[in-house]
Length: 154
Image 1 (cartoon, rainbow, N blue to C red):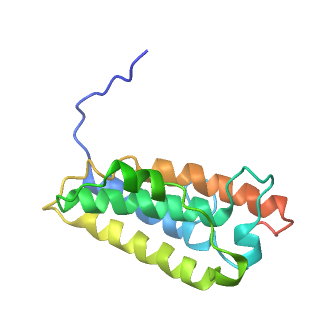
Image 2 (image 1 turned 45 degrees about the vertical axis):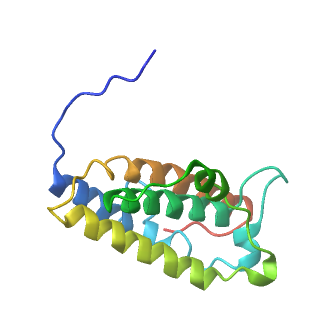
Image 3 (image 1 turned 180 degrees about the vertical axis):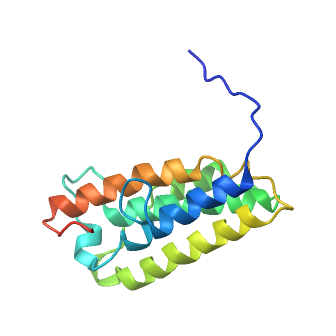
């Protein structure tokens, strides 16, 4: 059964509100601004099984797809080779894993997407599904944190 898409006009103010609330208050879950709190390099790289993704990979996956939306907005395309290579990039070695840099990139990406959504010159179609995609992966990150014994973020 194929997806049925209705041509419903997007509400920029509502999308911006969802984006901001996801960051500051959370959408029925932890605020995105806090999801990487107190995360060390080893915790960011921990995997429940060797063939599963780690927190680092989920974050860089979300950053990649946000970047794809921003680049397409500027008229740039992503090649299929780049998608294959960067969609779930290999995690760095522990000595190279800088959780502070990951947090900085996470916040910077949030602000760039927010600015694009707020800019009335741009179509919001590139961003309408990003909050739902990111919420899904934030849930996975929170589960990986819990599996490592990290305290919940209240």
